[in-house]
Image (cartoon, rainbow, N blue to C red):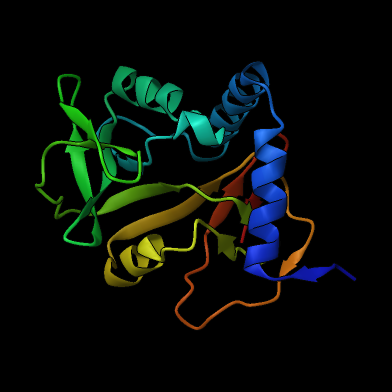
Amino acid sequence: MNLSLTKNELRTIYKAKRMALSQDEVTFLSEKVLNNFILQFNPIENQKVNVFLSIEKFNEVNTQIFIEYFFEKKIKIFTPKICKNKLISVEIFQDSEFAVNNWGITEPVSNIAADCDLDYVLTPLLYCDSLGNRVGYGKGFYDEFFFSHSKIGKKIGLNFFSPKEEIADVFEKDVKLDALITPNQIIDF
């Protein structure tokens, strides 16, 4: 039987685990996550992918390598942005301008929300359990985004760690992921 922990307990554990990784480990593991994503989903030209811009100081999966791959393969790239206290998806291009918001997160300067189907939404997280429930930073932006956007093909979490514990406090408004990609696993929920 798996251990069951609260989101706050899991946040504490997995923030510490992630911060213990060196920059070389983050780079190496991020490349493995990208390779597993490509292996499983093989995105093609003109597909639309929303990908978060990683926060280096938090040792998140380095999504810059995903973005470079997507530009190279002519995949349309969108990134999240907080606008009027809601998460929107903004299309970016090679020459797009970016700024850092109040939380220290890089975002596109544009406030033009995409109104299109997204094939994939690559989602940041601290932890994901074996049922697809995710633990983020606790603001609920992604749950609200997923709930209000029916035009999403797959919601995919990117993480360095595989599920071990279950999340004890899953709420009705929590939206499950469709898949989790780690350096060593591809899990479909």
